[in-house]
Image (cartoon, rainbow, N blue to C red; front, side, top):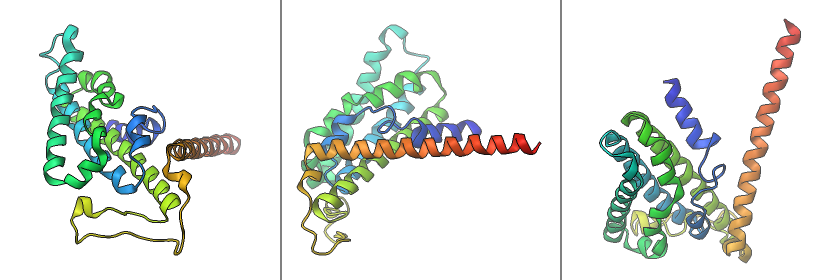
Length: 224
């Protein structure tokens, strides 16, 4: 159980693909104009990451090391094609918004990296846990960054939710009435600034937690 807890902590926080590894930045910066866009691409990436980790782990003893990378890429490409076709069929409006960044999931370094560094060396349950944790961590960054840019840039939250949940689910929020928006937030420079702020916030929280741990250890040593 401890191992699975460590895997979850690594994917969601300690070694988060978006905030620490800084992988897959192209779609992360390009599609996070709104929270719903981030949610759509985050779920697509999560499915591919989980599926590729499961498949790679299941066949790891049957694939020669010399050809493992081409095999991994074929598995990832097949999963991305399935996701692309499914989104085109069931979420066509969102599919059109995300555009080229759905097939570009094939080139996401996070996915091939986890397949090579973890799934090919671990049994199926651990590989699945790693894919799920890393996928959720990446999706969380997409949603938070998308929500931050949407709120600052347009003054709304969850606009376009009907693209995923149907026309009856228009849940657009306007937390700041009569706010006209800040154009820079929805432009590419706003994406870089927003991601930089998130990385800085995570580093500040980690430094604060580390300092509190050191202080608590020093107090225990003095008291004993």
